Length: 284
Ligand code: NDP
Image (tube, rainbow, N blue to C red):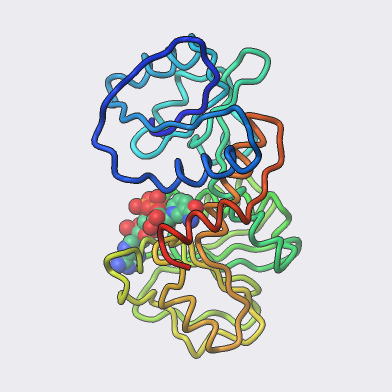
C-alpha cells in the first residue's frame, strides 16, 4: 500500500524515509489549490501487514487509498468488491469507500483513456500496444471497453503476451492478437494508436530505444508513452519528428489523480495544477 486519502479523528505521527513522492505532491497540490480540507499521505506497508492496513483505513474512516506494486493483486481479498474494469484486469490501484464498503478500482488505464480522448476517440480504432505488463493490461482493457475495435499486443515474452491478448479477446468487445517482438517491430499501416507500455526509457535508462521501426510511424498516428520520467522520452521525440500526435506519460498520471480525487471527494479538480507540480518534479 502506498498512499492513502483520509478524513479521520485519530491523530497520529510516524516517521519514514521521505523522498518526495510525485503522486503525493500532485494530489496535495490539487487539494491545496482548491482549498479542500483533505490530505493524502504515503505509508510503506509490508505484504504481511496489508490486511491490517486496510482494516485500519476502514476503522479510521478513510475515503480510500491508492496501492502500488506489490499490493495491486493481494489487496483484492481485503476489499468488498471490484469495479468492472478492475475485475477484468485482476488488479486494483485505487480503493474507494462507497456506502461503507471498500470497492477496488483500477485507474491506470482510465487515466490513459482520459488523456487519449484529448486527441482521439478510441471507438473503432486499432491500438498497437508494446508491452504486456500491468500497465499494458490496464490500458488494453480500458481502451477496449472504450470501443476500440482491435488490439495488437506486441511483447518480448510469449507467456505474458499471450495472457494479455487472450484476456482482451475473451473479456472485452475488441479483437486481440499477439505479435512476438523479434528485432524492430514495424507498425502496421492500419494502426491508429501506438503506445509504449513497457518500462523502456524510464529514468535513468533514458537512451534505451523502444524496439519500433521509426520509419513505420505514419504522420497523424497517435503515439503515446506511459513513461512519466522523463516526460519527453526518446520514443515521443522520434514520433513527433515523424509528424505523429504525441501523448506523454504525465497525462496518464495526472488523469489517474483526477479520477481518484473524483472517486474519493466527488469533486472535479483542475488537472493543470497537478501537471505543473509533476513538471516541477520531472521537468516539462
Ligand atoms: P511490468 O514489469 O509489469 O511490465 C513491463 C513490460 O515491459 C513487459 O511487457 C516487459 O516485457 C516489457 N519490457 C521491459 N523491458 C523490456 C525490453 N528491454 N525489451 C522489451 N520489452 C521490455 O511493468 P508495468 O507494466 O507495471 O509498468 C511499465 C511502465 O509503465 C513503468 O515504467 C511504469 O513507470 C509505467 N507506468 C506509468 C503510469 C503512468 O501513469 N504514466 C502508470 C503505471 C505504470 P516482458 O513481458 O517480455 O518482460
